Image (cartoon, rainbow, N blue to C red; front, side, top):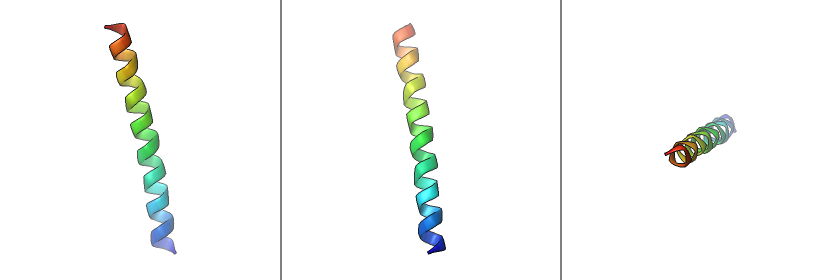
Length: 32
């Protein structure tokens, strides 16, 4: 159970980081 919970939390955090990085890349491309 604990392993599944930790994996879920890690996946959510990674997803948020990926979304943030993608937004930054999009903003940079638009600025260019």
